[in-house]
Amino acid sequence: RDSRTSHHTMASKTWSQIWVRPEVYPIWAAVGGALCITTFFVTRQISTSPGFRPFKEGRMEGVHEGKARVKEGTQWREHSIRKFMRTQKPQIFPGLNAAMTKAS
Image (cartoon, rainbow, N blue to C red; front, side, top):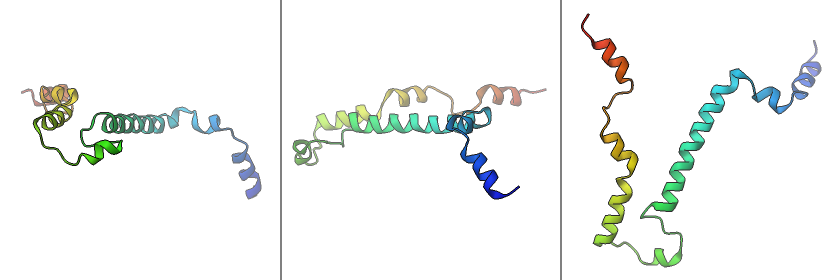
């Protein structure tokens, strides 16, 4: 076979023939998960971070360390996911750990 024939075959495949197949699903899952986490992080930073000031008036204030700003920073840091994770055991697979450590 010459190289022009195989190149032509690859070029004639559509996007869905290349990317919508079961063996590509893990790539979709990894990229989709990364996009979701990135979107969450960026949205949270821009919308609620006490250090982010999109408008000039806010930036002109400078650094404020008053009680209101400290409270705002504490509320931002102590978000609901962090509070929830404090109630969980620091294990990845707690069920598997319990099954593997049972005395026989």
